[in-house]
Length: 385
Image (cartoon, rainbow, N blue to C red):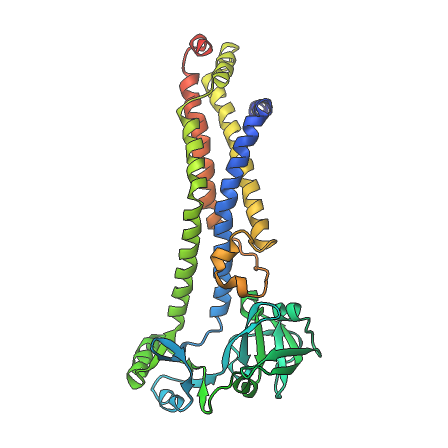
């Protein structure tokens, strides 16, 4: 142990002697790790947010489509759909999207009869009377609306409507409630100008998960103009979207990955003249091959671990403290119109181990291999070049 501690001390001293080169390698290495880790952290955090959302998604959502686009669905459809064996419940949902020109953000307006997931109220209550509303933290921050405050929105007839804020809420996912404004169903219908007897979609409850696909096929056969969407399909869609976006980002930053590979290859193909001279001197004064290999191993490990840890910390801070501002616009996509929200920290040990294996191990190996070639050569030949 004492021997290795002295070798580590010498390795640190050796790196400090070549401080400019060591710092350049460390900076490039850290930047590469930061970039890759930021993409993985951001994608995993968004997937974790969607997992929270999926917990409250209905077993089956039934929408109506015309010319391939989402349209309002007649409430009368609910009678026949609810009579299908295996369906335990069906309720119409009233909701829509609202662009707020004042704050340049998109809100989701939802009828209180279609509450999508367990909402943990911070203050107040959900609306029960016309003219009442409950808002998410993002909307409250943008509009300065607290409990007992007021929220003014412009309806489909270009008329400002005043709502009394009765509650401020959140859930386990900031993504779920940050942009949400909950109104009564009657207020939603009036605000968007829904025709009488029509809703946005249906939420269908099916206790037996094995029957969902069968019931979806029966609904499609019963009403050909509908589009049944299962929870599994929604989950798969989110996974595909975030997987595609993260893959696109990794492709964009492949130049950084290639630069790192070139740097590692350069280390593996040979040592500089100064490094060869140092190895020759160490061999001449009595160091054996194992000691020289241990020295270069610790040098590579110190550089790689320092770069890896600093890169992971920078990526964590970038994603969870600064909301991944460099990558968020590409990964989230719609976030440019979404009220700013803070991602819930989500840490995946598997990603860390994979990152460590594909960055630390190759660099350490590329440091030790050329050292072994020089260490087994006669010291005089090494020093003479």
